[in-house]
Amino acid sequence: MPVYYIYHDESAFTSAQKQSIANGIADAHVAATDAPRFFVKVAFVGRAHGDLFSNGAAAPDMVQVVGNIRAGRDSAHRYKLLTLLDDVIVRNAGGKKFLVEVTLMERPAENVLLEGMREPEVGSAEEDRCRDLGHVPEDMKYTNLRR
Image (cartoon, rainbow, N blue to C red; front, side):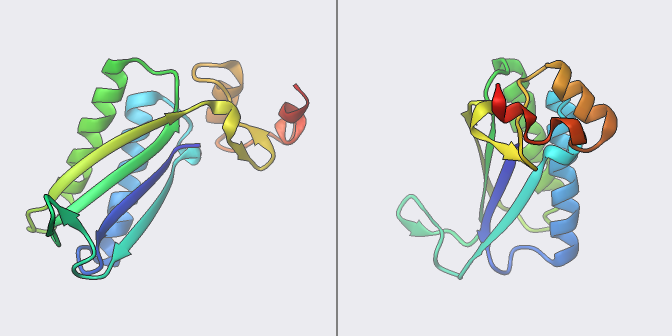
């Protein structure tokens, strides 16, 4: 399942901004990939002032979004996702000007379990079924492990 880590200075975002960013990231992922929304996870990783660096210097205005996503999408889909994710941070900056970096890291679907279900391949019937239901179907829990 896609997991997005947002590394930021601990004072960068309010709780309301984090909620808005998390929703925006889920929306962006779905818009770019058509994956089920409930697959999308977001973790904010606040760092103490002076713990983030760019070009060898402290960069408290840096926000790094690192997405760990399923492999299998073409360059156009990944670029769309990159730009949508960047826009989510910029739109929710609350007037602050951040140095935003977005990185996507791809991994095989078979390397992830959710509620015992092996993550479906991109565009598969299993993915469609999860999207349609909005959750992992009971009959798919643990059964994909036996394949």
